[in-house]
Length: 592
Image 1: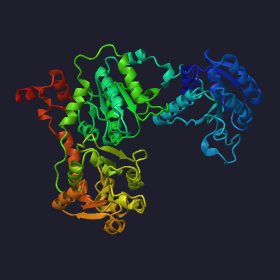
Image 2 (image 1 turned 90 degrees about the vertical axis):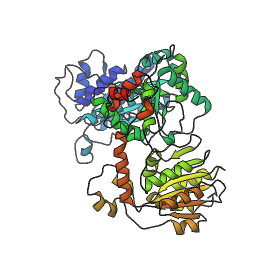
Image 3 (image 1 turned 30 degrees about the horizontal axis):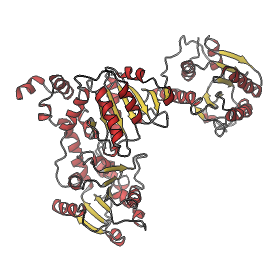
């Protein structure tokens, strides 16, 4: 029988999954739940060595003999300090020593408690990784615990061998041992380039609904595009992305933000993927897609996530469905997987269903304000230029309109913060002759005003500044009713400032727009490739009115009709889309 402690049972389950069985144990009581649970399982081979310093060097001998990871286990307090010499030896001898240290709750540190030292940070400079496990009080704790243990055990042999510590809080010395079976814990696999069985992984995608989620990144090359196109064709894959993904292939869904909003009230069982392949970094539709995944899980749709990234890092954004991490270039992965596919789907419909819904989303047609002005600007921006998007509303608004694929788009989305967006634009523009546009809101602009106080400021910088007197994003999309009364004071920082004096002082041709007609005139000047720059267009609107317009459009997306989008599409795809969007197929059939 095993310990009743969930974190201990999770640890043992994953030690077995990763095939780590040999442990050298020194005496004590804090680690009783771990050691006695191991004794109850014939998988584990335990060795008893009283002195921790000797025990850890004993473990080195076992690693030299078996050429595999070996663990040491000790109680809390100074017992763990005695491992330092051997851990250093393992670091430089490159041996995969797993150091399991039992500990007390973190809140008791430096509170005159017995056997409580700073063992959670003792080895940070001499190990490849230190994992401080949480006490498991809820499912979020359990997910975090699972992820940390997987990551720690994988790190033992990642890019060479080395020592790793797992520090485990154990509140009570004693324990109940009434758990009959260990839980079936999710094991995360890291697949390195030298060890890929492409046919095997190709077979795992056979007959599955596969969705790529593509984050922010550089514009893809022709070779990369060809690899991705072939992969999408061979496996019937849709690519969910946004403007800053710069990923333009046949199956790209580049308006993922409004598409996912349109699916908020839909039956998503047909569109829920079996496999999500994540590539690159962050994306603007993050909350919407995570909500999509949660809804699918509540409907008992089974999904797993594959993460393809050269770093091989463990990134589990959907909390519990990451199973495979492919440590390699994503486009090499697509090329090899495409080549491993023997038969191509004769009548694909999964990607087609996504594309139909994507094509059916109408661009906003709204009264004067933020969204209206953004649309006029994005429709006029010249081809083959560069567009930088500031965070918050700017990056979201850009997802609502078509932007020519020749335009390279970037946004500081890594941390989703407003600082530095304009400085990044000036830095980019300083080393290119291309027109470099920035779409930015007022708070973000004023936050980074010093960007224009820069001797590298080029004449190719063009700024579209939406000034609606505050941070409208703080009111959207689902803030409470009291938002209009209370949030403007401090949260959305209502103001009456203008960029005019500062922009003109820094040498910009400044344009102000207060009406739809003035916006059109200003946009024409801003997007004139022959105009003398730098140029700044400041569009004035009203924050709460902009919020109202956006909310109304946001709510209308799910009610938009697909109409002609289904003409000429196979009956099977039509049925699938009709089911998803709640459309009566018989009524639809009679309409055409």
